[in-house]
Image 1: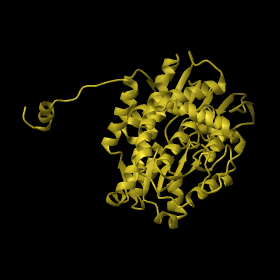
Image 2 (image 1 turned 180 degrees about the vertical axis):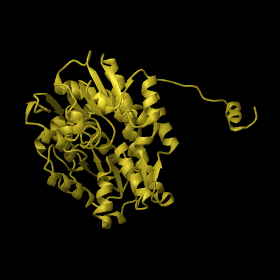
Image 3 (image 1 turned 180 degrees about the horizontal axis):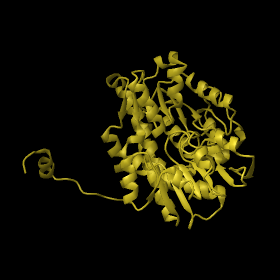
Image 4 (image 1 turned 90 degrees about the vertical axis):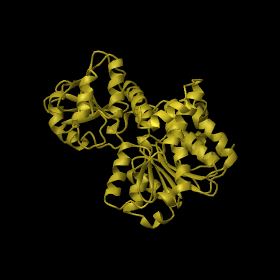
Length: 421
């Protein structure tokens, strides 16, 4: 049903809406958890009268979340959280469906920033953020707009690191739920979602075989675990680099080779960065890489691979295939950077599988309701997703799969609650 937004959306081409609607409808067919929640939201309208601002990768699965919150009664405004991940047809379809959209594919840096500002200037009550973009701008540049914000949720590891830094400095002004840290998120989204979608993106961009190659996974958090697991499944030899001794030990016990990056740089055919940190692949590593090496990033920001150093070292560079830039070194070696060092799974691919994001976005929806109803009791801090929300999402997921599990008896519950044997 076509609806009119309160504000005029800024999208590339409204005529793309029909094909964007097809994508959204396909995604909705594969989001049983959100669909279950939608039934309750339509009946109860828990966000009636509220304004919700969203900064996420704007594609079909995200559109399902935006429309879910709209169906809960909210006035929803959305912008992209990455310049190259917005799908223009999906943005147009959302704009036709009563969601205010400020986003388009590959905006200029000035346009990207303007879209963030326009989203915040709707004076939202609640925020769903990815990478801390909205919250960062609010605290650093527009504290006047913070007065109305009740709180929000954060999607990514990178964003949570930024939030915890604000909290530690006692400068965080609103409660934020760390959705990324929920069990129903990191165990599935970060591991199975990132693991599959990263290789979908790399394979689509390169059209090369993975089997027989040496893959270097830079960082062994939950995303790194997923990338390594899928690389091994595709037949690659996997090397892990880490700075955390516990994670490095785990990678070793999983059967992967663990090396310092200066050793791994000499061996890798494909490098995937998943650390959330900057310059984890830098000039000292580029100097050691073999001819034909491929570099891809799966972290939120395009800072993990030092693009400036790569350009300075290269004699020439050229686009050799969509989403692949080849840098020729002085000694004739060719190094390849995918997707400008941005998220390879969203730039070259379609992001995480729909069924995975169904769980993550269900967490977002239920968590934003929790913040809306409890913000005055929480105060300005970063908090975990309440366990009953985490558990509810898992229950709905199992029900959608037709899976039943056991329940403890009253006697068993009493036993576990007692200190006596």
